[in-house]
Image (cartoon, rainbow, N blue to C red; front, side, top):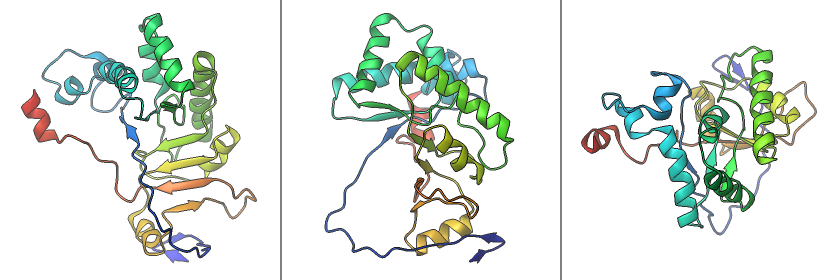
Length: 230
């Protein structure tokens, strides 16, 4: 079908509605290696005038992840940006490094995507994406001896045909996305197909599972409350 200039094909397999609904709560902290401030300002600034950075220092976030998951073993957390993990790892002591590895091994903490940064997925040049994946995966293999199988791409502004193809080659077989054309999103909602197997017309591979967030990921604490905390 054509959705305002976009061609998509929906293949529906009817299934009975489940008797019980399983709700999975995924804890995650989205961090930008560069946006309004520099990499280092996001990581560890002490400048109180930088509100977002002051409240959400990436160094503090990673420390809190380790401490909280050890204190509450039923919690699960995912981490995406290897660039910030490398920055934290370079200054973490042996105890915290071992805690982090144990949380990975026990399934409490998961490296999702494992790219150096959460790259543009709408109109990137493929060599840049390949390099981003390789650098991130080599690093996480080096320090944790794992290969990510799930991609968490909730902030790129759109998702092109190239990403499922390249990520499949990198060992990833499923992904969560957060931003697509609103017209296509509405069609997927109407057909109850926000979770689907993403296949290209030119590709025979049909085992790439994709889940699209019904609502964009939300902050637990509002900006106004953050100002009060300051």
